[in-house]
Image (tube, rainbow, N blue to C red; front, side, top):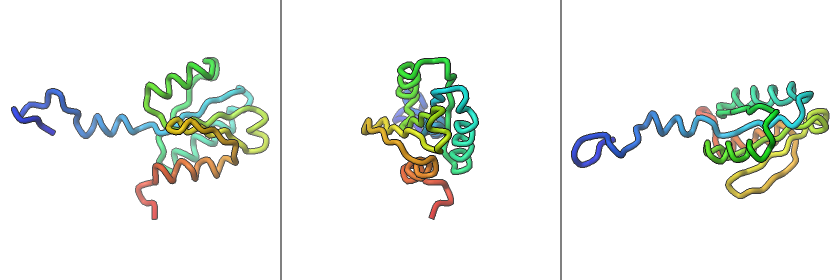
Length: 121
């Protein structure tokens, strides 16, 4: 994209715009013992074409939420030990600031409705 003078200054390219949309969700691991469930969730989202980020569980949740906001990530998935044993996750939509506890597959579906895969019909 070029401005009136023909230079790129002040305009973002399509490639940099695509990079901003790379990560649509973040998995926050609340307990290191639930890492298997967190990585399974991340893999399922990747298979669905959703960009995912997992942050170090040693950071406190508030710092992780601030990081997600700075990165422009819309969905936060929190997985703790009790949640992982029942296949439940906490899904937080950073746009409307609502949080719901739901099964992992339902959380993936909710995210896919907003960010459908390329071959979604």
